[in-house]
Image (cartoon, rainbow, N blue to C red; front, side, top):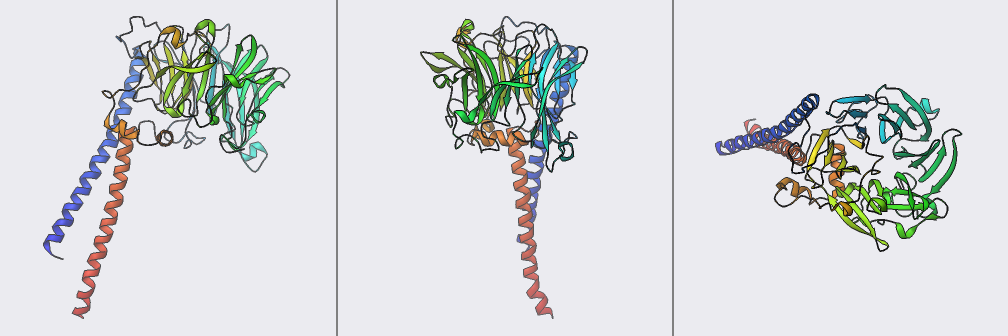
Length: 467
């Protein structure tokens, strides 16, 4: 082997080493920055500092009540809480941002609702993954339940629970109280919505999606066909109605509790991803507050969007997203006109003002839903975007990054899936650095192997001649 070949090999090694150091530095820097931001956020919360002070909104109401958050966890979370995001929790933040209450006793936390007539009591939906032994079966099962907790005393009261087979796509995500002893439940496991009397535990009303939907559309039947993830009791034209989020059909439907599906009120359609794309937690805003309108976390589209009902059809009336918003799963309009948003893959809960500026945020691992106590259940105290004259807010050419634009070249569902699996501190820059690092290491290994093979090939004839 001549000197030129040796020098070329050394230069190639140096290049690989420098690329490895560069990509590694980006990853270490991203992790360190995330840890620093989290530490600062905890420090500011303890000191009573709220982010967003001095924004353009002249009226920022004091957060004189509790913000409660229920959190999910990623597929990599084990029952011991290992993985890129910690074990799920129900957590309440006081007005200064400090932790007022925390509970980590369940595997998952979903819907959170304030209890009428109380200042600091909520009902929440939980899921517990049970072992085959606990299920008296050869496979796992899940206990889905609703509990009530006084956030001040910590006293927990059992309300209702049922066990479903399996684990994935059988966990209830929402239950709303519609009477002293009546609960409206979104039943993912059986593709239905039902009302149960919690005293007698008898089901008094139900709507089965198979009544109105073809099993050939939506998700895989029966494993995760409709993924009904939210229900809400509404008065629609004087009639008792249930609004249902049929996630895997990209639709929000309205079901008259006596006559069934009201097809002319359906928002979205299966595969119409310009309207909705696997949405979560739609909130109905009635006519007396500027509606009919629906405020919804349009999850796979990475935005919060509102639709106004006019002349018998739905028209988009408002949209909000920023560069960081990844996979929102809840949005509530507050009485002040602000909007409380839960950004699951962004690991944050944030409040935006009427201009769309972030005036408060809190970092929390993989949140599912949040509630500001004292403002009404979900959008119960807020007005429609049309009535408030809220302007759209989306990333512009000026505030987009090169890497952020690069991620838009990929299908949104791919970006969301990758973000779901990765640790929360991994953003677009860190993800590209990880891909680059992996590519460099694989290429380096291939080059070294081929170089070694080439050297052996050269030496073999020489060894034969020397014999």
